[in-house]
Length: 483
Image 1 (cartoon, rainbow, N blue to C red):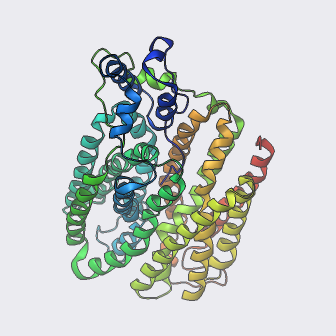
Image 2 (cartoon, helix red, strand yellow; image 1 turned 135 degrees about the vertical axis):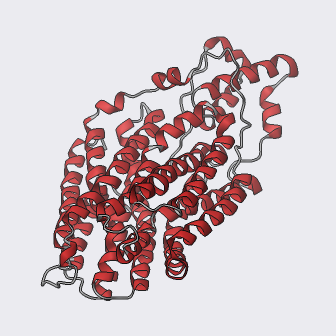
Image 3 (tube, rainbow, N blue to C red; image 1 turned 180 degrees about the vertical axis):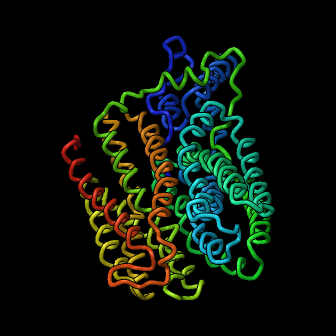
């Protein structure tokens, strides 16, 4: 979900003493597909041994590797990763259905809205924020990636089963929030490491299909979960969902494999984890443009996540059936997918700073005008469509922005820039809904006002204000950009 660019190790450092072990053509291919760290060191040593005993390593490697950009291996990887994406992010983006159910049924007594919302936002925040750490670990110990993914799948399923027995809201935050977030982050991030191994020329298409799984899950899963919650209650819904995730997740992991065989790092390897991390270029953190984009992403996410969490509750406040809130959330998720594709394509045509301005301005208008006067289902749908396209597609500017921050002289820094932006969005995913919960006046949920109402007036103003600041930030970003 976070990364659509190359996560490979461009600019891989091969010591002079080992140049005789690798032909220039092989080095060029490995530099775009092999991750940094001990993986590079161990693979280099292995190839050197092969060249000393078995002749040309380039020929041996090409004979055994499946083709890039085509073939059953590549597209099976895409299909399996798509399913995994729906299970992790698709489920996370449907928490608004749980939020509305917990609030309406008072499942956990008088638990506050902020506490109930934290169940879903903590999970999303951890999935965003942990991506960078997990990727660095996965790059260092590639031979352990399959084991890590199986363990994380088990954590996700066990956390849902455990949450089904919870009687206090803090138990839900710990299990469905913290534990599921950690498991989801560890389960999804390795896909980013494998993607550049399988695809080069068609990486954009492959990434769009894989990361579109979040939107597909966000459209379909709210309908299924709303039905299950209504008929079975939340406890059996979570247990059934855990079994569903275990089966589909296990089938997916069977086909998510690296194109380049993982090699266990030799015991005497000097390419330690912290050494590998320290050797990477982190100079971009001092770049004013990086600081501006980071703050901008944080502010934009502060306004985005309260909508995804509270739109079901707002719809119910109008006296509409719960199924209408579920449909609104599904339309919102679908509009976000459309926005990601549309704004991503526009970033290839016009400078990304203009896309930031357009995204912020469109979201600002949607919040202040459409949501502010949304007293019927039609206006709510109009709001979520416009807001979903403009605000939901905001992260599509990240590839261009990250390349601008790193500069043409340091392309290997791009994945790390992505990681930091993911951390800022993860923090905002927790803070934004908490602020919205404090602003929402639950006691006024039955009161309609000329502007907004139902206790959401301050929330509407907060969301619109964050998007207005995003618009101004886009102008400031244009002044700092090197493009």
